[in-house]
Image: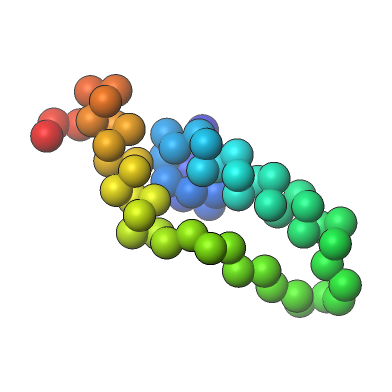
Length: 61
């Protein structure tokens, strides 16, 4: 698990997607300082993370 730098904790699918996007961008960026925005909403990712924690019984409901 990567934690908040690559998505919410325990959300392995999201973390993997962000890391793969980052690696792809490293090979396609054309200039220093270039930024790529991903079509992700942090609020949605947090909700998905909370649901994952709930399913894993890591947090009380």
